[in-house]
Length: 398
Image (cartoon, rainbow, N blue to C red; front, side, top):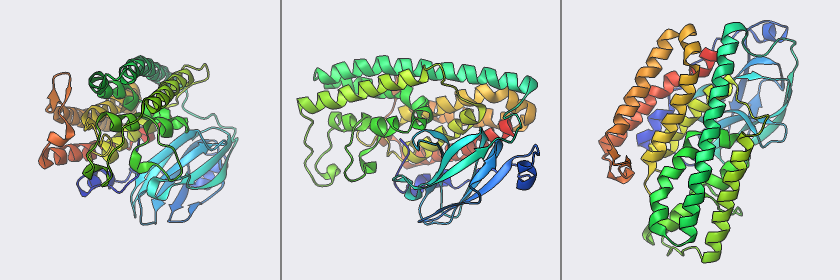
């Protein structure tokens, strides 16, 4: 789950590189039938989400999001129901501008800014009109991207299948009171979730139920999901629990929350196996960047797995998912921007080399075992990968 708190100074540098600007052709030309992207500006402040227009023609749309507030913000394009995430750009720091690039189909949507990255945000209706122009690439590139989409959907489906099987085994151990077995299965089970987390987030309702951290729970909202069970397995001391003695879950609560986690995992698996489930090239590219943002905001800071300290498992899984997404699109990227493709190859290898240094058996060292220099090296490597990865979608779509 993406971070909902201020970032530590150590990892903040991973967020301060703005996504490289796309070629921004004249908006009027695009609206009147030109082939360039339609570029809209978004001003996200403390109390407003000012989008420069409420409509755009179908085709490539660029939302150039500037944060004029004092808190880290994020911008979403949501489906008409306000639940499903069509596209998003996260972790836009104060004074920073980042671009969200997507191939927009005709329809009704909602825009949303979330200063502080909490709550429902400031929302407004947004309409994509039918430009009469075919949305997306054509010819050989279209065939390459169609193959990439098919392959990535198959990857997502495989990961949810493995997640379901592993979650059921974890649940059986947890409900049987075999906490040692449940602890041993926790991190290796969650890697399947972390590899495809942007897909789960796109459904809107599942991610908060399954992966919300305690610090991100809003008042009046029941906390459920993986991190609730994590806390029960690695029960904190009174000092680590805000000065309050931790009360373990009762047998009834264990059953309630574990059954819900399994049911939600089954729901996720069913949704990605639906006949109409697809992922477009821009969704795959944006998802890759979102996965790296997850690393920068939760894994590098050690905030994601605050009780188990298994953050490096999640770190590796996020990098895995981003790399698979990139590699599926690599042929198209290489044809359009060979230098970018080569740079991404090198930067992924650099991050992997650092992660491999912290392997322990079939897994990784506890995150608390890393020195400050080792954490800083990981943060710098994520930073170095994040900038070129932020250009992936633009290289494919524009």
